[in-house]
Image (cartoon, rainbow, N blue to C red; front, side, top):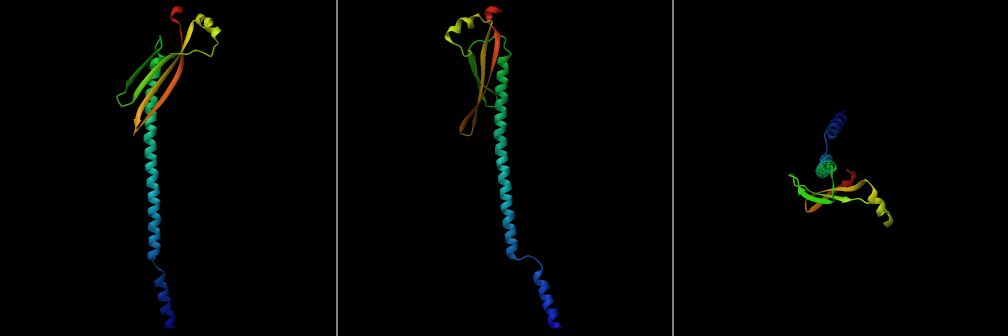
Length: 147
């Protein structure tokens, strides 16, 4: 009977707690999980920064395009400049000729309206690379001789 009690006591004390190997495996799994999570945060921050740059560039390009669209008179031109936040811009106004044959030049001259293509390009520096975005639209106005 004494032997049974001693073996029960030994058996109970051996089963409580974790072994050193179990603790090391748990710490290793925790470390790998935290590393993966921190890498994902880093990727998300970089992506957010790039997205913010592109959104700013699109807003600047739209601003310049809207400035061209509100002009009552247009002629072939191009302008350049820069914004206060480091973005540079270029705008182009070029006559837009629809796909036509050489014979159609006389018909085109008889039209009361002319169409221009408006382009707005915004450039910015991203690290060592120069990035750009371009927006364009068409605007039709009455020719000066028909006003």
